[in-house]
Amino acid sequence: MKDNAAFTLIELMVAMAVFAVLSVIAYGGLNNIIKTSEVVEAQAERLKELQIFMAVVQKDMQNIVPRTVRDELGDVEAEVKMPGGGARTIDFTRGGQRNLLKLPRSDMQRVGYELRENQLLRVSYMQLDRAPGTEPLEQVLLEDVQDWQIRLLDDKNNWHSVWPPLNQTGTTTSLMPQAIELELTLKDWGDIRRLIRVYDP
Image (cartoon, rainbow, N blue to C red):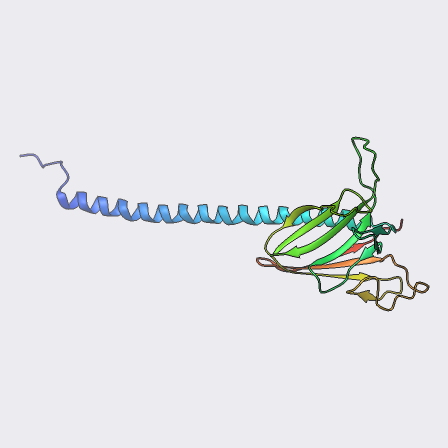
């Protein structure tokens, strides 16, 4: 009499249990790989946003020029204005604005940066001297920013959080900063500091 070659019920149950355990282990590993990939992609996208932000800020600030402007009320604003303690962190006039369409406009532009509801915005104007009712162009450059501090270095190597400096006499200190220090506090990456040298016009 020949042996029965078929699987018994116990053998099938054992095989199914082993297969189930291996499936759980494999799914767990795959799930971890997917989550890791998502985290890496999110970090890469965040780094890209930060790099673009820094490139825009650096290009703006390296091209600051000594040109005052008039605001909507006709009052004169300094080349660089940083009142301190307000919503708008800094305003300045920058040069080197490209004009590919050869429009009848200046190659200079009035630019401002401000932190609003954890968003860092670049605020710019089409005209240097603004008429009443002039609306700015606003662009969100960076999200999830908890704090944003700026200090400006004068030609006597003193740092200021207000500009023009409070001790400005008009004869001993230039109205143009020599360098700008930025300090960002990001929700996910903590503190980031950057030093930008202002080009001489």
